[in-house]
Length: 288
Image 1 (tube, rainbow, N blue to C red):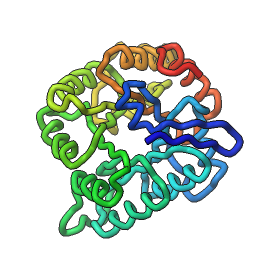
Image 2 (tube, helix red, strand yellow):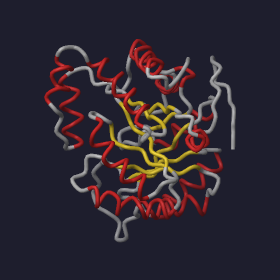
Image 3 (cartoon, rainbow, N blue to C red):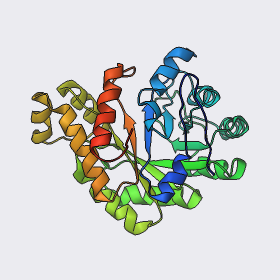
Image 4 (cartoon, rainbow, N blue to C red):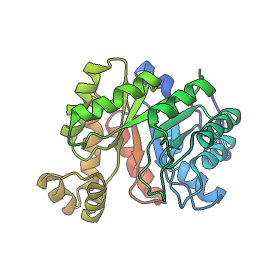
């Protein structure tokens, strides 16, 4: 299904992200963190970072922030095409079911189902698995495009694929990776995923890392080592060049079907959006 919309104060035209993935158009999504409460100006500013160059806006779910679903509904009201992050950790099935119904009634068309990396006081007696959440979405909101996550830095690619296949069988049509810091871990796992599920679409997450602190914090969270070559280049103030090369390599690899762009800063200045757009244009990903 194709939908077009107009954002307040702009001319954002959106074609469904999933449709472009299927068509091989290599769409770009922007991933944002919502504010702590409904601060409309802050939310819309973050969503507009890349202007009309993106097809969707991924909305992160964090316990100390405006819920992803609330932020997604607000963005939808302002002409954006949001990707709601449905997090399962610590949640009961009736609550998730109610959120899916609410999302469908609001007109949400994209959902990314994931576990979440937050801590909870206690897990339900019967924890809701991601595959179960995908099954619920398919039953309650069959028109919704469903994605899942893929961690290319996991120690065992066999375990990653064993975890992935039930999600695909439940109805996920694409996966989104962790940030690609170096191409090799992504390529290794993407090649295996392609062999196992040829119809699967893979969205690579990219993030400009402009300081050694940012690299260290991101890689510590992902539990992955980064090569000295990348560290040396970031230390030499070549972070933007590294980002441009990463985007270009992913575009040329044939292993990624689209990109999800995330920034290290929660509320980056406009010039960061300009530099990201320049990198995407140089890589032939966008033309705006």
